Structure formats: C-alpha cells, structure tokens
Length: 104
Image (tube, rainbow, N blue to C red; front, side, top):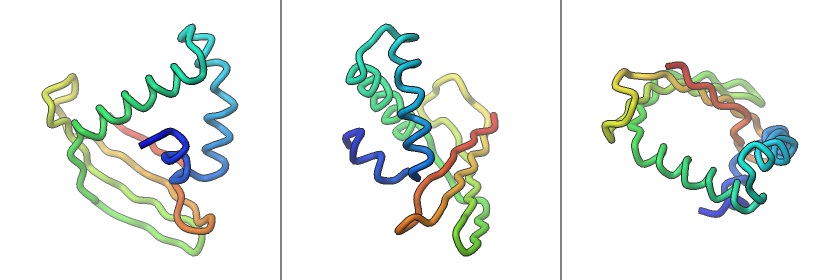
C-alpha cells in the first residue's frame, strides 16, 4: 500500500501532524521525504506482519470511537509479553484513525 493510500485511513488532524513532523524526520534521518516515507512503510509493514491482535473492547459515541486491542509479537522479535493498543477514531465522512497508543 502506498503512503497516499494509507493516509486515507487517517483523520485530517493526524495527517497534518505527520506532515508537520516530516522536515524533522528528514533532518534526523538525513534522508529525503521519499526515503523517510519508504522507511515508514517498511516499518509499518513489518509491524503488521509480526503482530497478532484481538479486540478487547470498543466504545462508540456519535462522532468518536475507541477500540482497545491486545497485541503480541508472533515473529520472535523483542517483545514477548502481551501489549495493549488503543485506536482512537473520529467520523470524517467515514471512520478515520485519529490516534494510536501502544502500552508495553
């Protein structure tokens, strides 16, 4: 999935946050915008492949939702314990991810 395709799943606020941090990432990593995006996509693809998630709870209001998942590493990487992931969503012409918090 391309970066532009992935952005469609995120709220406008989250997209603006990522865009505002892009120059900082480029400087820290000493990479171009496209190179930073490539690193990000490879990282997220690896996480998705190595995490097993299960829905623990969901809270849905009119314009917001909070989904809580348990997640654990299935690739034998650094984390061996179950982690908690909370995905906060907002309704913007459909549900969009507004924030993701992972508790180790």
